[in-house]
Amino acid sequence: MRRPSTSGDVLRLIREEGVDTRAELARITGLSRPAVTLRVTDLIARGLVVERADGTSTGGRPPQRLEFNAEGGAVLVANLGKSRGQVAVCDLAGNVLAEADTHLPAAPARALDYLLDSWEKLLGQAELAPSAVRGAGIGIPGMVEFASAEWDGTPIRPAIAARFGVPAYLDNEANIAALGEHRAAYSDLDDLLFVKVSTGIGAGLISGGRIQRGALGAAGEIGHVPVQDGGGVMCRCGNLDCVEAVAGGTALLARSNAPDLATFAALAREGDPEAVALVRQAGRRIGEVIATAVNLLNPAVVVLGGDLTGAYETLIAGVREVVYSRATALATRRLRIEPSRLGDRAGLVGCAVMVLDHILAPEAVDAP
Image (tube, rainbow, N blue to C red; front, side, top):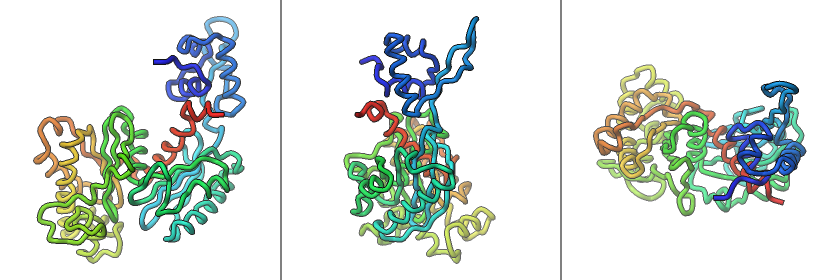
């Protein structure tokens, strides 16, 4: 395996591993002091690294301490659900600088124009120029062919490049949330299954520490796995008894008097008998599918997110009941089934992670 030697490698050592002196960089990389200085100077000139004279002194002048410069640019992110969404501007550490809730037009082409305008407004609120932007990322519902970055047939990269001149990335909202939960709350675990239970049901999988999208980006569509005794319910995909059609938010609202999922979840949380019974049964149905996923994938943790987790105690109780009884003893020996720790912010955090992992990767930093 090659030793790190490029400017991008040096940035990764500073940003991800906390290496903070030129001497330590030279030791790790095997580069000469002048070669290290050349690369550090390049990163400082590009605004990605700063150098501070506050290192620990062993006698004489304190050494210069290197630090990743989170203020050296911004990324534009958007987490869009079927009924609502969030847009934000983040720094290079993924910290949100300005954000807003949004309801986008249904047509992707119009929604993209609206999104670009929203980002410009947020840049103004954060007192940042468009030239500070280094990348953009969007999470949307439904299947996404990650490589092409098309939103229902509408390419997002040309429009974002025309407005901001930066690379752009698009992924499924469940994948995005899985990235956010993993990086912010479960970075010590390499295998995580995130299941979003909202209007629909979808999943994002972290395996071996990396998001798994499958061959074309269709991995994680557990909402379209059928459940037993579903009653012959037709799903929007054309099949019968998909767990989304039986236990998703739309299905539950159709059986209740609540006007929306937030109200329905609040009723269940407050102990309304009808809502509690519906959520518990939905948890069991979802647990059927998760049990199969646990047997197949053996995650260390299953994280439940989405609008319906406002009633998470009841929902998770139903999921746990089925998963721990149906999945294998070995797969569930240390398995944790927990509510999202980030809530609505998982998508924004995940979008920032997706973009930053691309634009700050050594090969991107070293690209001419």
